[in-house]
Amino acid sequence: MCLDTARIITGNDLDIIISVLNSKLFFYAIKTFYGGGGLGENGVRMKHTFFENFPMPNFSDKNITDIKFLLSRLSEESLDKIDKIIFECYGIEENEIKHINN
Figure 1 (cartoon, helix red, strand yellow):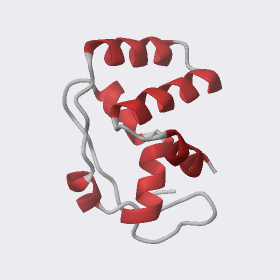
Figure 2 (figure 1 turned 180 degrees about the vertical axis):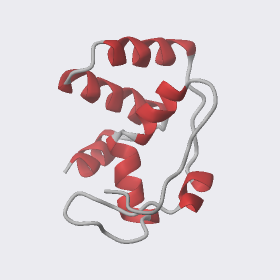
Figure 3 (figure 1 turned 90 degrees about the vertical axis):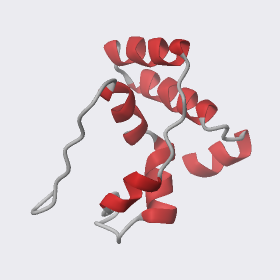
Figure 4 (figure 1 turned 60 degrees about the horizontal axis):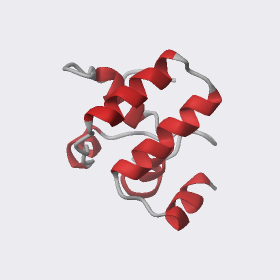
């Protein structure tokens, strides 16, 4: 729940940006490195400065097309496939993926 803090994101390819922001990698990074404190069992306070420091990879046209296609067919399986693409784009190794997923 957001009581008094909000951010607005504008620009091109918001669906790609939102996919990154909703990825397991992003949530793990916030929780582990950048979070401003916990909000219950599944919540983390995100400081706005974190967004300035979190790198956005250069997605290939194929990555963008794949993510947009999966978003159009949104399901748990699609979300897992999107996470896989995002892990790949950031160069995350299999052992790191297992750690993040646990």
